Image (cartoon, one colour):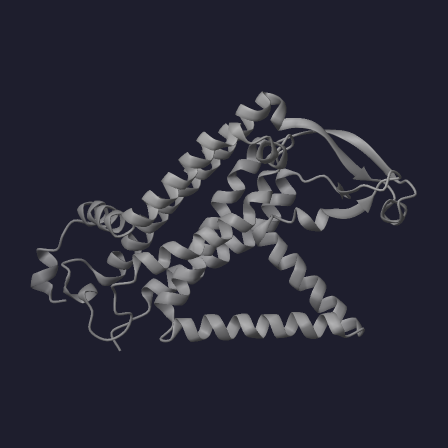
Length: 290
Protein backbone atom coordinates (compact mmCIF):
# COMPACT_ATOMS: atom_id res chain seq x y z
CA UNK A 1 0.00 0.00 0.00
CA UNK A 2 1.44 3.37 -1.03
CA UNK A 3 1.87 6.43 1.15
CA UNK A 4 -0.85 8.17 -0.84
CA UNK A 5 -3.38 5.43 -0.29
CA UNK A 6 -2.56 5.30 3.41
CA UNK A 7 -3.48 8.99 3.73
CA UNK A 8 -6.97 8.14 2.49
CA UNK A 9 -7.26 4.84 4.34
CA UNK A 10 -10.47 3.99 6.14
CA UNK A 11 -10.33 4.95 9.86
CA UNK A 12 -9.75 1.85 12.05
CA UNK A 13 -13.04 2.28 13.91
CA UNK A 14 -15.07 2.46 10.71
CA UNK A 15 -13.25 -0.57 9.32
CA UNK A 16 -13.92 -2.55 12.50
CA UNK A 17 -17.66 -1.78 12.42
CA UNK A 18 -17.82 -2.73 8.75
CA UNK A 19 -16.02 -6.01 9.46
CA UNK A 20 -18.53 -6.78 12.21
CA UNK A 21 -21.38 -6.22 9.75
CA UNK A 22 -19.81 -8.21 6.91
CA UNK A 23 -18.80 -11.14 9.11
CA UNK A 24 -22.29 -11.21 10.62
CA UNK A 25 -23.83 -11.36 7.16
CA UNK A 26 -21.50 -14.20 6.15
CA UNK A 27 -22.58 -16.21 9.23
CA UNK A 28 -26.26 -15.26 9.34
CA UNK A 29 -27.68 -18.55 8.05
CA UNK A 30 -25.67 -20.65 10.48
CA UNK A 31 -26.53 -18.36 13.40
CA UNK A 32 -30.24 -18.48 12.53
CA UNK A 33 -30.11 -22.27 12.55
CA UNK A 34 -28.42 -22.28 15.96
CA UNK A 35 -30.89 -19.72 17.34
CA UNK A 36 -33.86 -21.73 16.07
CA UNK A 37 -32.50 -24.93 17.58
CA UNK A 38 -31.94 -23.25 20.96
CA UNK A 39 -35.41 -21.70 20.93
CA UNK A 40 -36.98 -25.03 20.03
CA UNK A 41 -35.13 -26.70 22.89
CA UNK A 42 -36.35 -24.06 25.32
CA UNK A 43 -39.96 -24.47 24.16
CA UNK A 44 -40.00 -28.27 24.14
CA UNK A 45 -37.97 -28.92 27.28
CA UNK A 46 -40.85 -28.51 29.78
CA UNK A 47 -42.67 -31.30 27.93
CA UNK A 48 -39.89 -33.78 28.58
CA UNK A 49 -39.13 -34.76 32.15
CA UNK A 50 -36.33 -36.97 30.84
CA UNK A 51 -34.49 -33.95 29.46
CA UNK A 52 -35.02 -31.97 32.63
CA UNK A 53 -33.69 -34.77 34.79
CA UNK A 54 -30.70 -35.21 32.53
CA UNK A 55 -29.54 -31.59 32.77
CA UNK A 56 -30.20 -31.13 36.46
CA UNK A 57 -30.64 -30.62 39.23
CA UNK A 58 -26.92 -29.91 39.73
CA UNK A 59 -25.19 -27.95 37.01
CA UNK A 60 -21.45 -27.83 36.45
CA UNK A 61 -20.81 -25.18 33.77
CA UNK A 62 -17.50 -26.85 32.95
CA UNK A 63 -19.56 -29.72 31.50
CA UNK A 64 -20.35 -27.35 28.64
CA UNK A 65 -16.68 -27.37 27.65
CA UNK A 66 -16.85 -30.10 24.96
CA UNK A 67 -19.78 -28.37 23.25
CA UNK A 68 -18.08 -24.97 23.43
CA UNK A 69 -14.90 -26.52 22.02
CA UNK A 70 -16.81 -27.83 19.00
CA UNK A 71 -18.72 -24.59 18.48
CA UNK A 72 -15.50 -22.57 18.48
CA UNK A 73 -14.06 -24.45 15.50
CA UNK A 74 -16.83 -23.45 13.07
CA UNK A 75 -16.67 -19.60 12.95
CA UNK A 76 -13.08 -19.37 11.59
CA UNK A 77 -14.13 -21.56 8.66
CA UNK A 78 -17.09 -19.26 7.98
CA UNK A 79 -15.23 -15.99 8.54
CA UNK A 80 -12.37 -16.82 6.17
CA UNK A 81 -14.09 -19.10 3.66
CA UNK A 82 -14.01 -16.51 0.86
CA UNK A 83 -10.42 -15.38 1.49
CA UNK A 84 -7.37 -16.61 -0.38
CA UNK A 85 -4.92 -17.17 2.46
CA UNK A 86 -1.86 -16.85 0.24
CA UNK A 87 -1.25 -15.09 -3.06
CA UNK A 88 -3.69 -12.53 -4.47
CA UNK A 89 -6.69 -11.76 -2.28
CA UNK A 90 -9.29 -9.05 -1.79
CA UNK A 91 -7.56 -8.59 1.57
CA UNK A 92 -4.88 -6.55 -0.20
CA UNK A 93 -7.32 -4.33 -2.09
CA UNK A 94 -9.00 -2.78 0.93
CA UNK A 95 -7.92 0.71 2.11
CA UNK A 96 -6.88 -0.63 5.50
CA UNK A 97 -3.46 -1.72 6.74
CA UNK A 98 -3.26 -5.48 6.22
CA UNK A 99 -2.58 -6.56 9.78
CA UNK A 100 -5.26 -4.25 11.17
CA UNK A 101 -7.75 -5.63 8.65
CA UNK A 102 -7.02 -9.23 9.59
CA UNK A 103 -7.28 -8.51 13.33
CA UNK A 104 -10.52 -6.58 12.88
CA UNK A 105 -11.97 -9.54 11.03
CA UNK A 106 -10.81 -11.95 13.74
CA UNK A 107 -12.33 -9.71 16.42
CA UNK A 108 -15.62 -9.47 14.52
CA UNK A 109 -15.90 -13.23 14.24
CA UNK A 110 -15.09 -13.60 17.93
CA UNK A 111 -17.80 -11.14 18.94
CA UNK A 112 -20.42 -13.05 16.95
CA UNK A 113 -19.18 -16.30 18.46
CA UNK A 114 -19.55 -14.87 21.97
CA UNK A 115 -23.13 -13.94 21.09
CA UNK A 116 -23.89 -17.52 20.06
CA UNK A 117 -22.27 -18.96 23.20
CA UNK A 118 -24.16 -16.42 25.30
CA UNK A 119 -27.45 -17.55 23.74
CA UNK A 120 -26.62 -21.17 24.50
CA UNK A 121 -25.73 -20.46 28.12
CA UNK A 122 -28.86 -18.35 28.57
CA UNK A 123 -31.05 -21.14 27.19
CA UNK A 124 -29.42 -23.69 29.48
CA UNK A 125 -30.01 -21.49 32.50
CA UNK A 126 -33.62 -21.09 31.37
CA UNK A 127 -34.05 -24.86 31.06
CA UNK A 128 -32.79 -25.42 34.58
CA UNK A 129 -34.91 -22.64 36.04
CA UNK A 130 -37.99 -24.06 34.30
CA UNK A 131 -37.33 -27.56 35.58
CA UNK A 132 -35.91 -26.92 39.04
CA UNK A 133 -36.01 -23.21 39.85
CA UNK A 134 -33.06 -21.85 41.78
CA UNK A 135 -32.64 -25.30 43.38
CA UNK A 136 -31.07 -26.34 40.08
CA UNK A 137 -27.92 -24.46 41.06
CA UNK A 138 -27.30 -25.95 44.48
CA UNK A 139 -27.45 -29.33 46.15
CA UNK A 140 -25.20 -32.18 47.25
CA UNK A 141 -22.28 -33.82 45.44
CA UNK A 142 -20.19 -36.87 46.22
CA UNK A 143 -16.67 -36.40 47.58
CA UNK A 144 -14.15 -39.27 47.73
CA UNK A 145 -12.21 -39.27 50.97
CA UNK A 146 -10.64 -42.64 50.06
CA UNK A 147 -10.39 -43.11 46.30
CA UNK A 148 -9.48 -46.82 46.42
CA UNK A 149 -12.37 -47.68 48.72
CA UNK A 150 -14.77 -45.51 46.73
CA UNK A 151 -13.86 -47.24 43.48
CA UNK A 152 -14.28 -50.64 45.12
CA UNK A 153 -17.69 -49.69 46.47
CA UNK A 154 -16.71 -50.26 50.08
CA UNK A 155 -17.00 -46.70 51.37
CA UNK A 156 -14.71 -43.70 51.38
CA UNK A 157 -17.49 -41.40 50.17
CA UNK A 158 -19.44 -38.55 51.66
CA UNK A 159 -21.93 -36.02 50.35
CA UNK A 160 -21.11 -32.33 50.66
CA UNK A 161 -23.04 -29.15 49.71
CA UNK A 162 -22.42 -27.69 46.26
CA UNK A 163 -23.53 -24.46 44.59
CA UNK A 164 -22.78 -23.58 40.98
CA UNK A 165 -20.02 -20.92 41.16
CA UNK A 166 -20.59 -17.66 39.33
CA UNK A 167 -17.13 -17.84 37.76
CA UNK A 168 -18.04 -21.21 36.26
CA UNK A 169 -20.27 -19.51 33.70
CA UNK A 170 -17.19 -17.92 32.13
CA UNK A 171 -15.81 -21.33 31.19
CA UNK A 172 -17.76 -21.99 27.96
CA UNK A 173 -16.81 -18.52 26.71
CA UNK A 174 -13.12 -19.14 27.36
CA UNK A 175 -13.16 -22.59 25.77
CA UNK A 176 -14.87 -21.31 22.63
CA UNK A 177 -12.42 -18.40 22.52
CA UNK A 178 -9.38 -20.67 22.76
CA UNK A 179 -10.69 -22.96 20.03
CA UNK A 180 -11.59 -19.99 17.83
CA UNK A 181 -8.19 -18.33 18.22
CA UNK A 182 -6.30 -21.60 17.72
CA UNK A 183 -8.25 -22.51 14.58
CA UNK A 184 -7.82 -18.97 13.23
CA UNK A 185 -4.07 -19.10 13.83
CA UNK A 186 -3.83 -22.33 11.85
CA UNK A 187 -5.90 -20.92 8.98
CA UNK A 188 -3.99 -17.66 8.72
CA UNK A 189 -0.50 -18.79 9.62
CA UNK A 190 -0.03 -21.99 7.61
CA UNK A 191 -0.01 -22.41 3.86
CA UNK A 192 -1.86 -25.76 4.05
CA UNK A 193 -3.88 -25.43 7.26
CA UNK A 194 -6.09 -28.48 6.76
CA UNK A 195 -3.09 -30.71 6.07
CA UNK A 196 -1.45 -29.47 9.27
CA UNK A 197 -4.64 -29.83 11.31
CA UNK A 198 -5.34 -33.38 10.14
CA UNK A 199 -1.69 -34.39 10.41
CA UNK A 200 -1.40 -32.92 13.89
CA UNK A 201 -4.55 -34.73 15.01
CA UNK A 202 -3.21 -38.04 13.70
CA UNK A 203 0.10 -37.50 15.49
CA UNK A 204 -1.67 -36.71 18.77
CA UNK A 205 -3.85 -39.80 18.46
CA UNK A 206 -0.79 -41.94 17.69
CA UNK A 207 1.05 -40.56 20.71
CA UNK A 208 -1.97 -41.15 22.94
CA UNK A 209 -2.45 -44.70 21.66
CA UNK A 210 1.23 -45.61 22.04
CA UNK A 211 1.21 -44.21 25.57
CA UNK A 212 -1.86 -46.28 26.47
CA UNK A 213 -0.49 -49.60 25.22
CA UNK A 214 2.92 -49.29 26.86
CA UNK A 215 3.64 -49.91 30.51
CA UNK A 216 6.83 -47.86 30.49
CA UNK A 217 7.13 -44.89 32.83
CA UNK A 218 7.52 -42.49 29.91
CA UNK A 219 4.25 -43.72 28.46
CA UNK A 220 2.37 -43.14 31.71
CA UNK A 221 3.92 -39.70 32.12
CA UNK A 222 3.12 -38.77 28.52
CA UNK A 223 -0.46 -39.97 28.76
CA UNK A 224 -0.95 -38.19 32.07
CA UNK A 225 0.41 -34.95 30.66
CA UNK A 226 -1.72 -35.33 27.55
CA UNK A 227 -4.88 -35.88 29.63
CA UNK A 228 -4.14 -32.95 31.96
CA UNK A 229 -3.44 -30.57 29.06
CA UNK A 230 -6.57 -31.57 27.13
CA UNK A 231 -8.73 -31.49 30.24
CA UNK A 232 -7.32 -28.09 31.18
CA UNK A 233 -8.70 -26.71 27.92
CA UNK A 234 -12.03 -28.55 27.67
CA UNK A 235 -13.18 -28.68 31.31
CA UNK A 236 -10.76 -26.32 33.05
CA UNK A 237 -9.20 -29.28 34.88
CA UNK A 238 -12.58 -30.36 36.20
CA UNK A 239 -12.48 -34.00 35.05
CA UNK A 240 -9.03 -34.65 36.49
CA UNK A 241 -10.50 -33.78 39.89
CA UNK A 242 -13.18 -36.48 39.67
CA UNK A 243 -13.25 -40.27 39.74
CA UNK A 244 -15.93 -42.78 38.75
CA UNK A 245 -17.02 -44.54 41.93
CA UNK A 246 -19.51 -47.21 42.97
CA UNK A 247 -21.82 -46.72 45.94
CA UNK A 248 -22.53 -49.58 48.33
CA UNK A 249 -25.95 -49.77 46.65
CA UNK A 250 -24.24 -50.61 43.37
CA UNK A 251 -25.01 -47.32 41.61
CA UNK A 252 -22.11 -45.47 40.01
CA UNK A 253 -21.45 -41.71 40.12
CA UNK A 254 -18.74 -39.15 39.56
CA UNK A 255 -17.15 -38.04 42.83
CA UNK A 256 -14.79 -35.16 43.47
CA UNK A 257 -11.32 -35.82 44.79
CA UNK A 258 -10.72 -32.07 44.96
CA UNK A 259 -13.35 -29.37 44.76
CA UNK A 260 -12.84 -26.97 41.83
CA UNK A 261 -11.99 -23.40 42.76
CA UNK A 262 -11.55 -20.19 40.80
CA UNK A 263 -7.76 -20.40 41.15
CA UNK A 264 -7.61 -24.02 39.98
CA UNK A 265 -9.82 -23.23 37.00
CA UNK A 266 -7.80 -20.15 36.11
CA UNK A 267 -4.50 -22.02 36.28
CA UNK A 268 -5.89 -24.61 33.84
CA UNK A 269 -7.48 -22.30 31.27
CA UNK A 270 -5.07 -19.33 31.38
CA UNK A 271 -2.14 -21.03 29.54
CA UNK A 272 -4.47 -22.05 26.70
CA UNK A 273 -5.99 -18.58 26.49
CA UNK A 274 -2.63 -16.82 26.40
CA UNK A 275 -1.10 -19.38 24.04
CA UNK A 276 -3.88 -19.28 21.46
CA UNK A 277 -4.05 -15.48 21.63
CA UNK A 278 -0.30 -15.22 21.01
CA UNK A 279 -0.51 -17.69 18.11
CA UNK A 280 -3.36 -15.77 16.50
CA UNK A 281 -1.60 -12.44 17.03
CA UNK A 282 1.52 -13.76 15.29
CA UNK A 283 -0.51 -15.34 12.49
CA UNK A 284 -2.12 -12.01 11.65
CA UNK A 285 1.34 -10.43 11.38
CA UNK A 286 2.58 -13.04 8.96
CA UNK A 287 2.73 -11.88 5.36
CA UNK A 288 0.39 -14.05 3.31
CA UNK A 289 1.23 -12.31 0.07
CA UNK A 290 4.04 -14.73 -0.76
